Length: 323
Image (cartoon, rainbow, N blue to C red):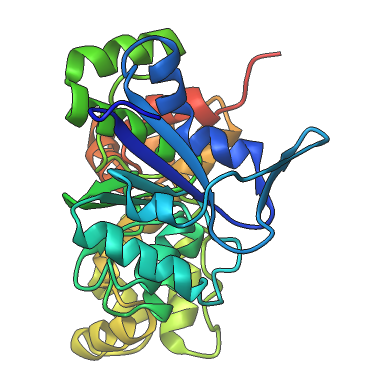
């Protein structure tokens, strides 16, 4: 039996759960036990639905605990829910509500946020998920205040994170909260990962350039502008191109894109900068000028605001590698 002072961590898995999902779900905590940072941690893996098992590498492992471990936990992590268009099992949702009511922290990683939302734990609260599923989360659960781009959100007793490594970021954040920064930083060094990526840092989001409706004068003007991002494009010029008054152009543009023409143009320039940083070895100053910015220093705040890192850092991660 675990010691009475133990911290009880329960991880909820469903059919088709993989070893990779588990590594993001509680790998940080498992290593915290291994390295002696949290020797009192009591980890329990629970089947969130009948016949759930952990699989990978030719192994299939049954899950030893039932939903009673959820209701008795101090921290519950739901790392995924592979059927985001369906409602999770009712018994699990009720167990999550019971755990939350008695004071447990509940965390949803990636598509696991859909489970928390279905349980009503995200109503009228900020939450995130993998960027590719953010629109679906907002559509299915309109009471959730979805923040698409951030790595993770700590809203006190309820936490959510984006996909993949954002789950590890959230795990280190929780260890920092539970055991202090020194313990979290020592553990991060042992894992050879960054000790602290703030939750507000942006996920790396694939932002495809939209296909404007060329039959619409505003859509045709958008397409025209996308071919001239290296040039100054005052909104008055765009309105004249569409043969519209500035007021009507602004109104129609917002109807189509949900953004002002100026904000849309800046966003498209940043997307173009991302593409050039990924696919060319142009200096950042040259990239900036090809995207309509006067210099790298002019590009930098817009790029960091949209992507979360500086252009040079983005290139180090995603740029072409010398052969």
